[in-house]
Length: 204
Ligand code: TMP
Figure 1: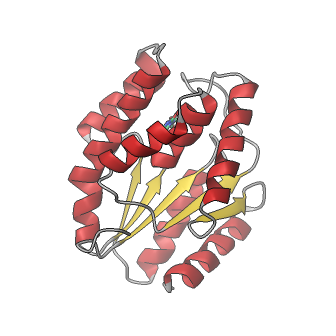
Figure 2 (figure 1 turned 90 degrees about the vertical axis):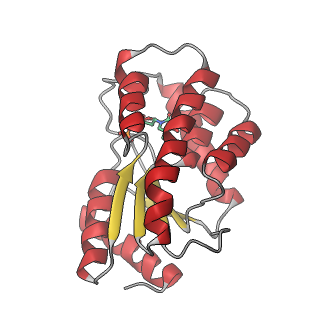
Figure 3 (figure 1 turned 180 degrees about the vertical axis):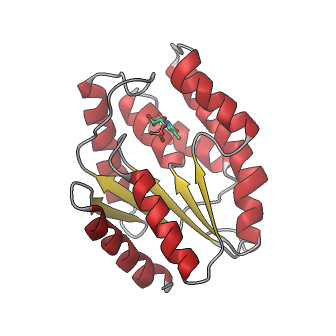
């Protein structure tokens, strides 16, 4: 983490819809709490009044035609979450677990919708004030989404590009990204995640 004021730990989860992120985040949080850590779990977009409102618009109530507009709304939700929740929690020394973060914008709006990834990365750096994950888990595997919101109802080509995007992002920062095959029993997946956390962060 680039900021000396920050003492906590940030762990993000990425991957396609319904690959088990929520289950694994719940399990990781339980495990870390059982070890005595203070853990905050957040989802993107969400976690603030603005974020939850934008989530409703982005996923359900508004048909957005501009990829740039879509990205900037995700980025606005991210900015609010970092300023009001993530940064204060990290300053208290907490472990923050995020269900999606800036990498989702790079994968979905960059690789998926065709926005320039460099621009997305730059805006992400600004809105997060440089607060980057210490570890990112990519749960890689088939998506079991049923296509009932604005993003889930995209075609297969879109999700193939998103998946390739994750592949590229992970290969660019191998120290941060941990690739976890998701199509396995939840216990096995949890064990791999715990082992990586133990090894990388010296926790557990
Ligand atoms: P989910 O996290 O409940 O799956 O819903 C969030 C949806 O929003 C998911 O389809 C991925 C999408 N998304 C983006 O397209 N860009 C982003 O920056 C974020 C955070 C999410």
